Length: 252
Image 1 (cartoon, rainbow, N blue to C red):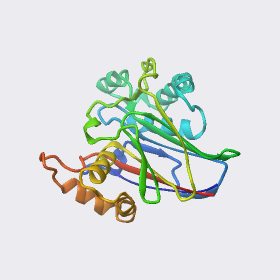
Image 2 (cartoon, one colour; image 1 turned 60 degrees about the horizontal axis):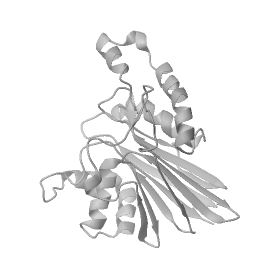
Image 3 (tube, rainbow, N blue to C red; image 1 turned 45 degrees about the horizontal axis):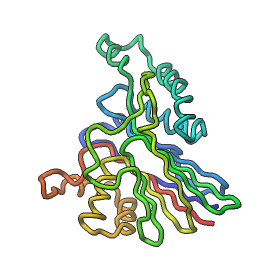
């Protein structure tokens, strides 16, 4: 199969680029022929400490095939937590920062795998939280996952923690499986832009194919316009947050 992978991202308005706390993998745009392809996107919770580092560990863990279901993720998490702890220079931290460190970092997770074998093209998606997948074919959206309505988004999404306190993942870990055809497209989006996209295609009846193309062609301008546009309830169409979108196009 032939896979084209690209991405766009920008930090929260008012923040420096170094304060961007989403993470994705791979971190280079690709055009590859492969029997299997993986990518992942994670939204580090800004209220926690070193959340961007934790998000990077999660996406790299998936792309490097350290886990592919809830059971293997539960097995891998303690090692991920150790890696996160080992990256932090604790000696340089204030007492307050050290105290906050004990609470750990938190992040959502969304991973996508495409494969091609004797049964044709298969895809699977794995989610914890409100980072979303949009699967489209011939300009029609076939799947939105794991959230499908703007009303499902909140300030308290499911998260993965770096402090050994994840407990059972059974209720929070959501998989979805399907088949792809040549020309299919997959977009992975963190919560702010995912919620905005869902609003545009459901409440505003906007064409998804055109919207997704504009998001990649005029990304920063589209983000600015959506952040400045008010909805009927007075809220912003796109809340001020880090914004990240990945695009995967697949062909035979």
